[in-house]
Amino acid sequence: MAEETILEATERTSGREALRKNVQAAIALAGAVRSTLGPSGLDKLLVDDQGRTLVTNDGVTVLETAKVEHPVAKMIISASSTQDKVARDGTTTTVVICAEMLRNAWQLVRQGVHPATIARGYAQAQKFALESLESLSIKATDSQIQSAVETSLAGKLDKAMEVHLSEISLKAGSTILTDGIADATRVKIIKQTGGSMLDTTLITGLALAKSKIHPEMKERGGPGKILILDGGIETRQTSFESKLNITSAGMLDAFRKAETKSVLDQVENLVNIGCDLLVCKDGVDDDARQALATHGILTYRRVEKRDLDLLSRACGANLVPDAQRASVEDLGDFIQTREELRGGVNHWILDAEHTGATLIARGSTEGVLEEVERCFADGLGVACQLLEEPILLPGAGATQVALARRLRRYAESVPGREQMAIEAWADALESIPRALAANAGYDGIDSLLKLTAAHNSEGDFVGLDLVDGEPKDTISRGILEPLSITRQAISGATEAAISILRIDDVLWAQMDAQIPDEVQEKLQGFGAE
Ligand code: ADP
Ligand code: MG
Image 1: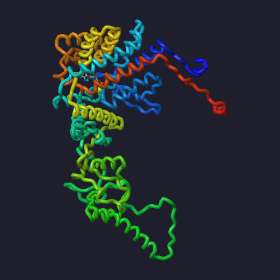
Image 2 (image 1 turned 90 degrees about the vertical axis):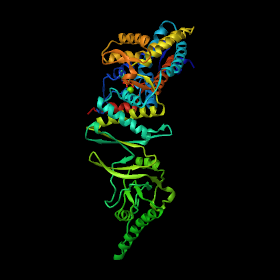
Image 3 (image 1 turned 135 degrees about the vertical axis):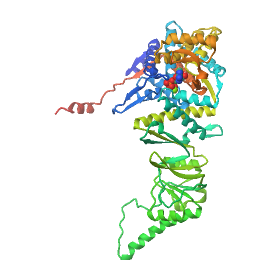
Image 4 (image 1 turned 45 degrees about the horizontal axis):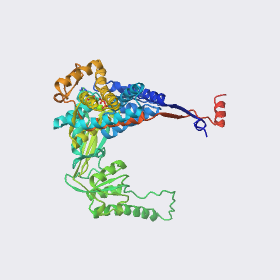
């Protein structure tokens, strides 16, 4: 069969035309987020198809919310999402650098360089840059770690909130650091509308907006045993419709007694296995409530499944479906439990060996709360990476300029046409200081030239001061970024650019597929009357 017949229902672009269109898509995509880059970046107002609005400064949020159809744009968005998952920051940077790499590659293709040669040169440049990062990095002190978390939040919130959230993120990170690994899933977030963002607090331990089920139950200042019930202590509810034939006055009474006994038996089993604290997913009957209080078993009910899982992990307890069948092995350990009023709401707080921390996010509206939550998650992600690997690079464009200068020297030693690709790759990195300057109202090219000259005379750690547009030392100003973020951004952007460069044929399945005849008829009839 001829090729044309197979591809009948397909629109096709090949060769240079395919690359040109793909590069165009990448540039358009970067254009949508470039203005959010850096502390002077502006916000975007996003409106979804239901009319819900979201104001954000976060590149990946903009891209993930926008309904983008172009396959190449989707590839770049996916690189940005990976950056978000792996490094929690540097998402806009990834997109801007990737698009610039493609724009520069297109210029080279027009001069007659083959895309495969460019791809090879880009891979060489990436390898060299990643190796050079080490010579640019510094070992972080505690206060530098704090500054780096602040840098990652720069421009997302107001200054006071950035500092507050950085402190909290770092505290949360230190709480969950065990054996050099910080597991961010051990931090729970509770959103509470009301108050100001600055009222957002962190509690060490697992907090739940819950109160004990009986006022006579005592909180335990010391350690004890916890049982987690994936159910409740209730008289059994039949799931089918049942009918009870009462034939004598004593029968109903006997039936109730049997039910109460079953509930009390469950409590008795808990007493026997030595349970001090009971947490249930479902309800607890009145009879059981009283009995639990009498036996000194502190109880919380109607706890969400997600929280039960956190509790189970924190205390090393099993999730048990039925109190009657619970055994000593199912119990977990806790260190202490208490209740505290936070923002007018009672919270139950549990400390155990692996409980981690809870953020109580405050804000005037749902929208504000969501932004606080997103920023905290980013801050926490950055804090965790730094606690695991406390290595920093200078921000404010310094790293990119330093790398570009090294790369240009390296390119001179490469004989083939790859040399041109390595230079193009270095130019692409410099799109970051240019965009930072432009977003702050300075000329991108002039600022880049000034910065490059300053690197020549003052060294690698000079970045742009966006207040006056002048090159200044980044270390003394605390504008620092984790090595892990830049490393991931460079790899993600280059890999996406290379895979896009390798495409020389785009086959579009016909988008507006035929509407079946019967549907067509109905559509025609629709609204005719
Ligand atoms: P991304 O999504 O890529 O993280 P951001 O909007 O967070 O984008 O901007 C990050 C960039 O802003 C980094 O290059 C960082 O070095 C720079 N930056 C952050 N704070 C400052 C500052 N105070 N002065 C200059 N540049 C800064
Ligand atoms: Mg950032």
